[in-house]
Image (tube, rainbow, N blue to C red; front, side, top):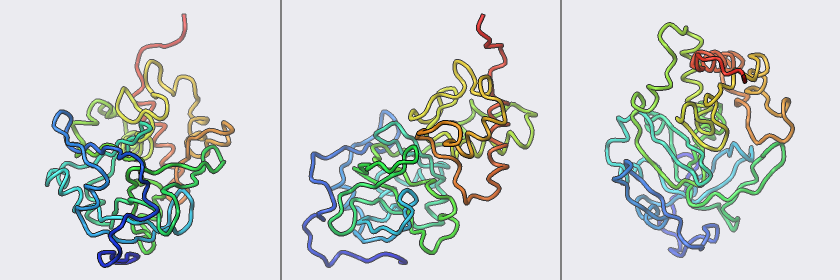
Length: 280
C-alpha cells in the first residue's frame, strides 16, 4: 500500500499523538437508528498504519496514524454505504462533507487517529489568510494522494476533520428539493453538481447543507444582494472581496475552475425564490 507502514508489530501503547482527553463519541447510521462509537472502537476495526499524505490544509507532506476507511465503513454502516450514493460526515463545528461512495472504492482513504511522531493531533489551517491551530479530534478523513493526481487536484474536498457523525445518504432523496427547475439549462445543472461538491459542506440552501456559513436562499437569495460578477469573484477569490473571511475559494487546480464558478452562479439564480424580496 503506497505511503503506508503497517503498525501491527509495534508497541500496543497509544501513540503520543493521540489525545488522551475524554472520548468524543462518533455517531454512525441513520437518524433514530444510529450507534455511538469511540476512537478506541474505530482503532480495533482495521490494522493501524502510518500513512503519509500531502495535506491540503498545510500544503505539505504529513504523517498520520490511521486505519483504512473502507473496513470501518463496512463495520459501522453495513453494505448500504456502497450503494447509497454518498457518505456524509458531520463535524463538531457544523460542517457537513458529503463524499461519493464511489470515491472510497476508487481511491485509498483512511481515518486518521493522530499525527505521526510526537505531534499533537492538530493542523495549522489557513483561515482568512492566517494559519490557525485546529484540533482534528476525534477523526480526520485523509487520502493517499502522493501518487494520486485526481485526489490531489481536488484539494481539500473529502478531507473533513472533527468527525462526530457518519451516515450513508441517498443522493436523490437528500437533494431533490434543491434541484434546479426543469428547463433551467446546462449551466444550472452543472452548477447543481458543483454546489453539492464544493459549497453545501459549509452552506445550506433551503435548509439542505452545512451550518458553518450562512444559508444562501432563505429568507433572501444571495443572488438578490450580490450581482453575478461579484458572486463569481466571491466564489473564486473570497479574500479579494472581504478581508479575513474564513471562506475558501474554489480549489485552484480543479479543471474548468472559472466555468465551475459561473455554473454555481447560474444554479443559485435558477433556484432563487420567485417572489420579490425588496424591502417595502
